[in-house]
Image 1 (cartoon, rainbow, N blue to C red):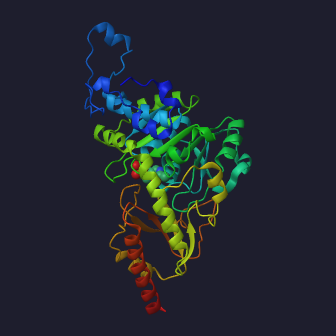
Image 2: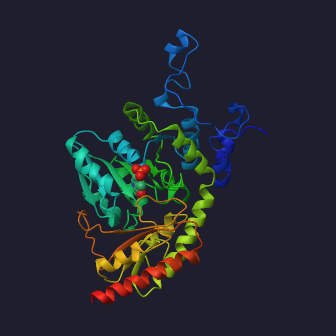
Length: 399
Ligand SMILES: *Cc1c(COP(=O)(O)O)cnc(C)c1O
């Protein structure tokens, strides 16, 4: 088997790249996968080599063959200039925010962002003298009116966390770039397979590898990819913070990468079928799934995205809290839990109304977020069907 060069890989199709990127069996005694390298110290053969600082690996925090394999593969997949792997999705977010912002700078942050990201802005960034303005995710080109001379970054996330607002990323990027700001995106939902961030104008893209890349609810990992403009500051800040991930998690993310396309395709198929089934239920008011033509933001999804993953939300018709709790507490197949992207189905109730500041969250009924796993759809529907029965019974008893 002849070795693939980076140029060879670049012209191959995505599924082939997922199989080959970041692998170099020749360097691993012929074994298919790069193993878990555990190490802090790297030994040098001579004082000259130690002092010239050109070694491929110099110290554990700066990278090992295991992290290099994942980062190389991720860079390939994203069409980026470079990427770094960090210990969690949240670490990826905080790395991005600290790599490009300094005291006195202004940040534009989507109001629909992952809540811990918002909390980092309101806490650490504020303390560091960085001001955040939260903006309506549907702002589009209107972002121009919010830009100030010191606006250094526009942060996007699409669809919005829990509430699934879409964002016109190319339009936002065009305006932000004209004013010299960096465009960041939390791309966890779509992954680069369903939204190629750098082709759409994003300078620096975040992926919580904890979700679909791991795919089995057993790792914590983050990835950040950057284009040529954004890469130097990202790499420098990553090294400055010593934000290196654990080698087992990196290995498991590499393993997950090989089957990512298959799992995402199945997640898309399962979730869309479930979303359609839910949309026809009498207990459901709205389904927030960007691939459904009835969902706000569907046009943007259709124009910019290449697929939809397995996470979406529904708004129920008004029902007492107790009735919703009875529905969820009795489910046998859906777990109650926050992370997602694994093989198993999950459901949580949510309410964004207490913390949104640029938009109002008032959907007119209880909101549920669902992650559809790999179980048989009919079994999942039967589980929810029994749940709706409990909801109706409790609601009738309360009336
Ligand atoms: C889960 C998630 C994160 C954080 O990932 P962790 O690895 O759990 O820290 C960040 N952004 C989004 C959109 C997420 O869903």
